[in-house]
Length: 208
Image (cartoon, one colour):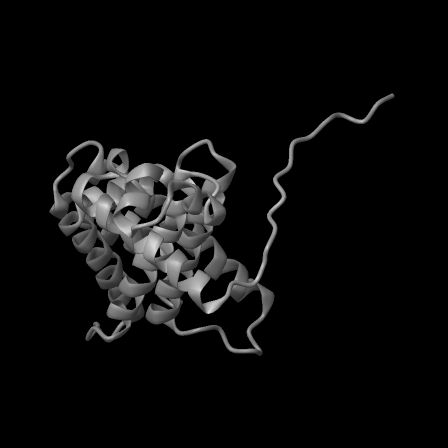
C-alpha cells in the first residue's frame, strides 16, 4: 500500500554579505513603515520595493511572500518592544510583573493599531511562511515570562519546565485573542488589559 502523500516546506539558509544584510534590513524597515501607515493591505511587495529603493525582484530574493516579510517585521517589533519592557520598573511580585508586561504590550499594540493588525493577520494566515510569525510570537511570550519569573535554574525539575510551558501556551493564546479583538473588532484598550489581568490571576499559580 502506497504511503500517504504529505506536503512539506523546505527552507534553505545561506549567509548574507554585509551589503545583502543591510538591504534585507532596509526591506523589513520599509514594510514596517508601510504597515504603520496602512496596516496589512498597505504592505505589498511592489510598495516595499519602492519604499526601499530596490527592484521588486530583489524583495523576492529575500522573502518568499508578503507574510514571510511581515514575519520579519514582527520579529523586529517584538525584539524592540521586549528590550523596552526589560527596562521598565515593575511590581515586586511575579504575577504583578507578568500582568504589567502583558498590559504594556496591549497598550503599545493599541498605539500602533495598524501595525498590530498587519502582524497578527500575517501570523494567522494559512500560509506556510507565516510559521515564523507564530514562532516569533511564542518566543516573545517566553521572554516575557522570563522577565516576570526569572529563568528556571539548571536544577529545576521537569514539572517546573512543563508548568512554565503550559502557562506560556495559555497566555499566548489569550494575548493573541486580545490583539485580534483590539484590532479587528474594535474592543477597548482597558477591556483587553482587564482580560490580561484576569488570565494571569486564573492561570498563574501563586508560587510560580
